[in-house]
Figure 1: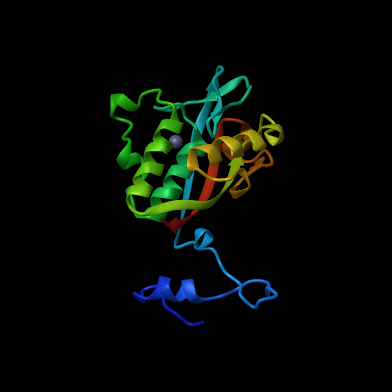
Figure 2: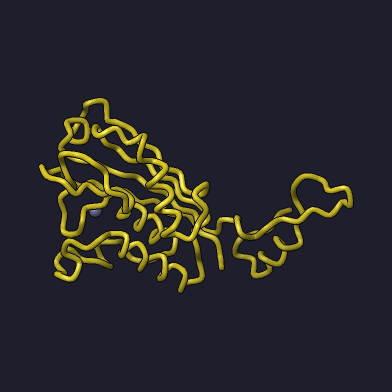
Length: 193
Ligand SMILES: [Zn+2]
């Protein structure tokens, strides 16, 4: 079916469009819940400093260093916020939560993410899925990935299977590789609600 996204009857045509495995009756329906209308990408990097309190995606991670920053430095929440803002056409995290504003000092970044999820919903969108890559030399994050995905899914109102969390080292290269910083890349797909 050929139809353009800027065609005002686009959604109507999509609703009538039948795809999928043939049903014995010949009737096959498609859910609009997983059709992505917009996508966005976000990245973040924070320096590491000695101390406890490392938090990634709203989950406390045992480590001898923590992320520095005006907020709690949660790079996963920050990258995800920018991905959601990019997809929804909202200003970036720095504009919405300026680091010169004392109200965001030491804030739990999941609170910021919750605000953005609400703003995105006010614009008529909700996340379909998100994909996240954490760049960290240490600690080993494999045991934490499922917990981070579950927490983010909870914050986004998604099933955990719709949140992918991957972790990579930087092969000893650059600030991330030396253990001086951690970084995150996130991508988010939005549907209409
Ligand atoms: Zn940040």
